[in-house]
Amino acid sequence: MADLVSHPDEVKVVSKRFGKGATDLNCYLELDGYKAVQKALAMQPDAIVNLVKDSGLRGRGGAGFNTGMKWSFVPKQSAKPKYILCNGDESEPGTCKDRLIFEHDPHAVIEGVVIAGIATGSHAGYIYVRGEYRYLLDIMQKAIKDAYARGFLGKNIFGSGYDFDVYWHGGAGAYEVGEESALMESLEGKRGIPRIRPPFPAVVGLWGGPTVINNAETLASVPHILLGGAEWFAKLGPPKNGGTRLFCLSGHLNRPGVYELPMGYNLKKMIYEVGGGIPNGRALKAVVPGGSSCPVLTAGEIDVSMDFDSMMKAGTMLGSGGVVVVDETTSW
Image (cartoon, rainbow, N blue to C red; front, top):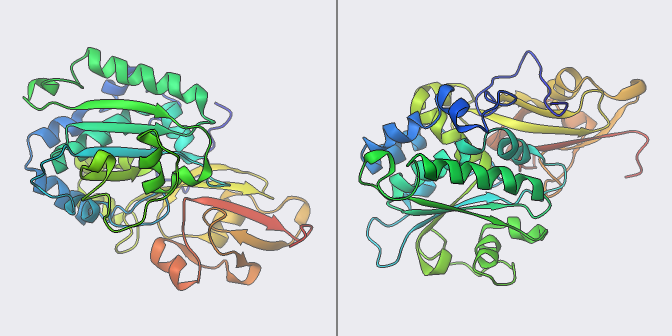
């Protein structure tokens, strides 16, 4: 468990089961596992969509679009099957959060996929895992197999009359497959290059069917929202930026690691208090706030809230949560 770090300011939501043996299904059930999906099965689909919408959960893969709003775009009636696609192709440099979710709490991802399916009228989900994470495929495959064995996946899940299948797929290490339309191309057995849009995935996605595509952290957050409520989750962060975020702190820091902090947490405090500051008293030069696709912040620009709207006002993006700290010794 050397990769698990902690700080007093952390708010454990997505990471609450990390290090507690939740890869084992019995343990997961003891830690409130699969209670949320059973609650969802007793709800109307629109009520689930509105609950997630009101929670302020925004896409944790980088785009930051409201998750419930995204689900609402899926047509209620469709001649073609609908699909849920979990984007676990974590290839953005500086980002390593989804790895921990798959490694320590794989059933949370499965549960989130199923809830998204119930909310949108889908009966099949795919979990796409980054090609370099080969060892995680064994964990994910076992979790899916165990869920099927208990009747949590497949025909008549939980005796509800609702059918839902989940499949896993391993990538081949292509960076651009992290883009959602390229992800679909790869899953369909084609070269992983982005599609021209429109049409958008919610209308024409996998194999031409309406498709919801969410990041692994986004989907792992959904069961907690079902159990804790939209108001609770929304209040963890600033307006329209509900919940917590797994921030990946790396670079020139005394305490690098993945920390779960409230949305809107101050970046300067994140670097100097959570991350322990820069080694050997060296000065800060720049910060990549959310993965290498995001514009860099200088040392004078880091007194800012880490949420999607504040980052946009600062001229950059929150991205995928990869905070890379660069000190004065680095040529830039």
